[in-house]
Each structure stands twice: as structure tokens, then as C-alpha cells.
Image 1: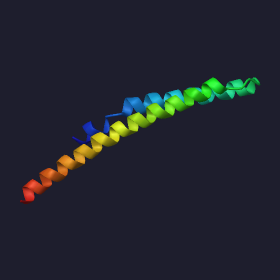
Image 2 (image 1 turned 120 degrees about the vertical axis):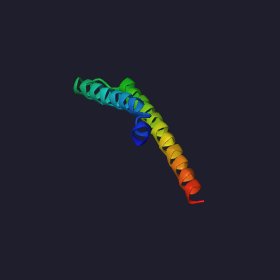
Image 3 (image 1 turned 45 degrees about the vertical axis):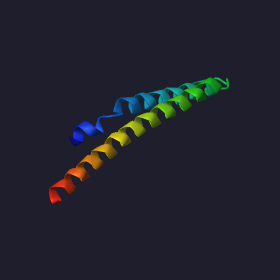
Image 4 (image 1 turned 90 degrees about the vertical axis):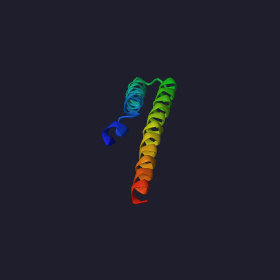
Length: 78
């Protein structure tokens, strides 16, 4: 059950990380060419937002699993 809980939000976090890395690489390449990289800063920001959404989804699933485990533990003690 724990392995199932940890999978939620992983794809979203990975996609957000890839967007951030692509944004950083593109901005570094354009800065090397002497061109301002304003549009790639937006890509980095969007990637960070997508990563945050994935992190929140993973945390929500984990907290609900903890709540279920706690309620089952309390039922067995009663």
C-alpha cells in the first residue's frame, strides 16, 4: 500500500522538472548568444508550478494514507 501511495504525483513532478531544466538550458544558451532570455524565464516558472502541483498531489495522497492507517490503528486498540 505504501508503494502505491508514493506513485501519485511522480509523473507531474518529473514533467515539471524537465520543463525547468529545458528553460534553464535555453536561457543559458540565449544569454551566451547575447540575447535576453525573457520567454525562457516563463518556461522555468511554469515548470516550477507544475512541479509544485505534483508535490501537492503526492502529499495529499500520503496524508490520506496516514489518516486511514491511524483510524485503523485506533479501531484495533478499542
